[in-house]
Length: 343
Length: 236
Image (cartoon, each protein chain N blue to C red):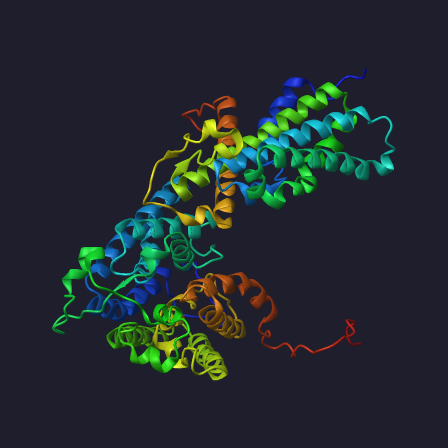
């Protein structure tokens, strides 16, 4: 039985939740491989912790609620675990991964009634919780050291935790650049290594590949990611145009941070997002505007998690105001209309 | 002297548990959520609320026959406001640092619906002694939740307990601080979300305990091995 609310058309082939979730996992593979390639096997270890904790917590709650453990087979806990795992830096301590998964499943999902009932995206709620509680551990990424690159850092060294070379991500470096002009910032490679930007851009491309697969399989529609990413670009360009020497260029908003990942894998969550097509487009535009606002004027370097949570608040209202016209009914008329039926 | 509307025993169980202002009535949430980030803040606010509630319940009960019911609420608020001013001046005089930490939430006790609620619902209908007793029990119930939430948030958010007790109890209490963790701090518990999480979990815990007690109190229904053979019961 499909618990996912899908808007019209309702006559579709029998797709079950676990099939959808397995496709999502498959689509995550390019992104995970790219992250592992650049940032070391720590990513895989994080994923091991997040996924196993998420499944264990889900099983525990299902047992407490007297539900069948067979509900574990819908893979939704696995997907939540994977989505948290890929947000965490490769050097994050093991308990960060476990705490995040526990928070996502217990507080983000099951407290509200389990799959299909959660008003917020569990993965983003958990990430916001971690980011507010442990800002240091969640925002330090190791320096990208892909194998065969002859880098000093070494691919396996990222397992050594704090001893590994760390590097500021593009958005972090940009946040901390102070009064430096943009030209000076780009010239100073000690602040932001070009390898870091390239690594993140490649990871973003890998997520894009997975996202395109999801669109190809018709599991998500293309309008929402396009609305989100183009809003990021346009609003980013607008802010950049106000002060080109101090604001981040618009391409940085797309290539850095988790923008592409969120566009395809987080915003498209059918449970906590808007349902109607118009609502989804508004959802994407709103999320993009909030991300740009947080990145430009906020104190956190990246604002995707917060913007998704804020738009989740707005999703019921978006659905209320963007009800699609019922087929066969006339178009809604603006203004006051007399309610009396025609004679 | 008229009789109290409730027996003393029930006043106590209502104030402390069944009708707990923080967990059941959800009154006075503003100070509850705002200042419970450490044990000492919670204790300070709990004591101030206790003082105000005792004073207001006693005075309201004493003047209950002389206040026309049409103006009773403004009159009660005036009484509460004078006691809040007393509490504020006392804290300013004796625990100035704590007074500065609690800041606006001391004057805001005036707007705490719990106090006005007790004045209107109980003290204005009861003689002074039960009213005083009710004020004591209700503020103990409120203060208990404050302390529980304060210690929970301080423990998780700072890894300590009883830090800064000297702000309230003088230099004697300066070394009461117990440190549990130094490198593990869930910062969010000190911030407003932590207050909401903590309060929600405490309410859930209270409901769970109530459910368990109700289940224990009910006689066990012994299921018979043989199900009833009768299918139609309503028709004769």
